[in-house]
Length: 432
Ligand code: PMP
Image (cartoon, rainbow, N blue to C red; front, top):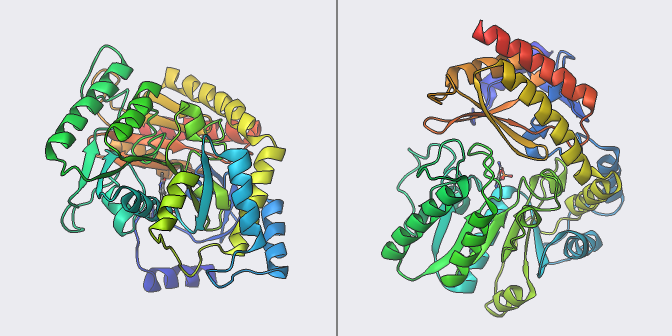
């Protein structure tokens, strides 16, 4: 049966990119994913960074049943009770500063579309600044501000989009005495260039608080504060794309809290749906009032769906009740120490960075040259999978090969130890 299905999958599916796995998959629970043959793998990618409270948490399953008894879906203009509750919970318990009004959509890409649409309508401008190495999604607008992967072949670059070189402590574009200085110099230069080219129609600066797909880069706080000022000085809105950073993974409620910088618009997704498609975009009452006066619209088939809102409510409750934010720091600290143990034995581990349970491990040919070890990364990732550990490697030709290590926040010490053992033996074999 599974052999036949595997053949069918090769015959009938569009190959949409990403990793090609040798098998099909059947189920997932907690940190474990199981393939069609019944083999288990430790999932250190949390699915696509969504299963932050573990796959198929009982509270999520219960929420889906509850929605089954109430409603999965309604006319887009009808506000389900669960949606009202979720908006209130975000405003009262999770969002920083004056962020208090939310809209609920499906994916991270869609959240970016909403955020950009809001910023453009609010400011009347269209110019957007985004970081090199950023990933805000794959759809029309979101794709134009995403630079973590090669964009050649998708048509002309978008007029009005400008890149700020991303701060990278390991591979700085402009080296300086400190990482902070280097990051600020990059920004200063990029803003000067932008001001020369700008038509004075600035709409937004959009950033991930931690640049994840671009290599797990944590900017200095002064850089984030400078972005806040850069947006204010130019009448642009600051958008934080918190697809990966919101709701505990980095050891704080949000990236905004991590840096103590409040954006005008915050996009959230991944963790919020716990594996179901749910995203939110939040802004202030002032901005929302202005948008409403300008007839902002966003009705889609699945805006404000009750099914995913029920799940979102359940996810947020689990994070609070199970103390998962503190656990991200605790387990992240443990995992980091184990990785540092490996670093002492493997010259190829050039850098370990990140926050909470969003960690990056950069592979190099040697520590002096810091040349990226792309082949070693690909080979070892495949070996890890063979041995029962699923890991994600972020490969950018000149910016390095970086493992993004991000298990569910519910991961146990035993699971971390098993993953480290696998990584250790896979690295040893690859380097043999
Ligand atoms: N923003 C960030 C920061 C992301 O990491 C991603 C997904 N990798 C997206 C947006 C896009 O989300 P989605 O894939 O759900 O459209």
